[in-house]
Image (cartoon, rainbow, N blue to C red):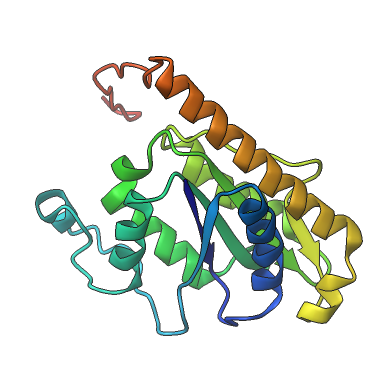
Amino acid sequence: MKVLLINGSPHEKGCTYRALEEVAKVLNENQIEAEIFWIGTKPLAGCLSCMGCRSKGSCVLEDKVNEAAAKMEESDGIIVGSPVHYAAASGQVTSFLDRLFYSSGKKLAYKPGAAVVSCRRGGASAAFDQLNKYFTINNMPIVSSQYWNQVHGNTPDEVSKDEEGLQTMRTLGRNMAWLLRSLEAGRKAGVSVPEAEQKISTNFIR
């Protein structure tokens, strides 16, 4: 089994990475493969609403989004990490996830997901709520921990001193491993994903 951990920070080995690293360590200890995927620093455009992905099967903009989508198809779970910018997830990771879920959401459905945020001081819970909305609109079980999945610090060394935050990351890793094994056991016992109804789409004027 494998979990893909997305590092949505502009710093490849910064505070967000330090948090994801702690989760990955525990996943590996539980015989779960963990890959940390950095989205990089090149500008990522937001969704163009061109609907090209409906015919192509992937986003028409060839960048890290499609690379991640291919990796996610082979993964059993996903963890998205982001720094907190103005009490929200980073603009880079927001554009990334908007396009990823719109173009490839069906590949992620029913796979466990979790969000991780890192901040210097405040805004963590708002960013955490924002990221979780991607999972809850896409039939994905959310993996929780003993506290909201956040670490505090202005540098990776400071994050390493956040004992409660790192413990929260380790608990998240164990909970992800447990849920993945539970789902695997269910599949082996013949439990399939729920049968979906035909989707109803409405708005407020029709």
